[in-house]
Each structure stands twice: as structure tokens, then as C-alpha cells.
Image (cartoon, rainbow, N blue to C red; front, side, top):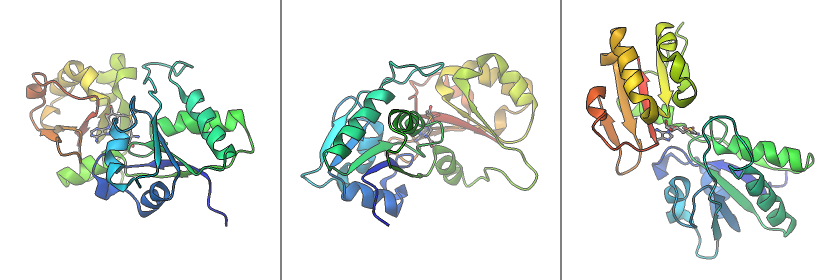
Length: 232
Ligand SMILES: C[S@@+](CC[C@H](N)C(=O)[O-])C[C@H]1O[C@@H](n2cnc3c(N)ncnc32)[C@H](O)[C@@H]1O
């Protein structure tokens, strides 16, 4: 089978050793690497793979704007998809980098959806990546979910008014985008006796990773967007 000329590649949560073999190969064999950061060599995803870039690979930061709420055209997925198609039409091998897994709340969802919308016959692949949840659980050596458990994943900023109700469901859970809902989450967990079950992990897998076991102390910290809370 012919190798795809366009790949949306998950680069994992931050540790370069958590790249898959396929992700590494696609990056190493590419002509162009695109990513969401604002500058060619600055951004969460590109920094994970910077040591793998051949000197002649061209790198473009597309300055995508993460949007809270429903996606709209200001995010830049359309621009990213158009650029991928343009480069493939110029016979370039193109990789679009997405942190973690591209299709798990990632920018790969928006870019792949736009690719299909712009050209139904356009061929591309998605290379899965290690999600931040898997990396966080491994870091803590705690199960994500076992046996009959139902594991809940909650992108916090979208569910600010339902935090208590979601915690009431019980079971293990992960709160993504945790920084922006931390006071409400702490209150809800505390009211239900589950605060001690929660751990916050920031920039897991990166050299500046932080793990906070007493969530109340995290309120004092200047946390990154790349923070999640695991509860079990
Ligand atoms: C838009 S979601 C992207 C998830 C990503 N595609 C994945 O597979 O992990 C962004 C959220 O994921 C979490 N996240 C992503 N990478 C992280 C990391 N290295 N450490 C902690 N949380 C991370 C944070 O909660 C962040 O707000």
C-alpha cells in the first residue's frame, strides 16, 4: 500500500519517548511539519519532536486559536486543512502534529473534519498517540478503570454548572481543562468526601511536570492549560 502523503500525527503528552514508532517515522520522512503553535519551533506539540526534525524539514506554526465553547471559523482548522491540501498538491509529504491523541478532544478532530469537508476524496491518515490520561495514570501507577467501573472524562470548562452532578455519578473520572474550574471542582469533591481521591497533574511527561496531591494547594499555583485532575 502506498504511504499517505498527509498524516495527522499524535505526539503524545510530552515525553518524546512516548511517541509511537509510526509517529516518529512519519515525522522523520516528512517534507513539511505543521502544528498549532504560533511560531515554527514554539508550541506544545512541536517541542516534543524537535530533536527528530531533519535540518531540511520545513516547519510551520499555524497559530491556531483554541476556542472555548462551540468551534467556529476563528480557530483556524479550515486554514490548516487548506494548507495540508495545498502542500500535498505540490507533492510534499505533510505531517500535522497534535498533542496526545489527535482524535481525543484534540485539534486533529477539527483538522480531519475540515479535510473531509473540503475534499471528500482527499487521502490522509491519522496516527494515534498516547493520551494525557494514560500518561497521568501511568505516572501515578493507578488504574484508569477496572472491571465494572464506568470511567468519566469531563472537559471541565464546558460543564461548569454540572460538576456536582458529574461527581455524584461516582466512579473514577478525569477532568480535562482542570485549571479553569479548579475552585468549583475542589468544592464539589470536598462536599462528597472525594477530595483526597483526586490528584492534579500538570504538563505530565514534560521536564517541568508537576503533581499535586492536595488540590487546595494548587489554587495558589500559576497552572498551565495542560493540567488535568484524575479521581479514583
Ligand atoms: C483539548 S484537550 C487535548 C487532549 C489530548 N488530545 C490528549 O490526548 O490528551 C487539552 C487538555 O488535555 C489535558 N492535557 C493534555 N496534555 C496534557 C499534559 N501533558 N499534562 C496534563 N494534562 C494534559 C489538559 O487537561 C488540557 O486542558
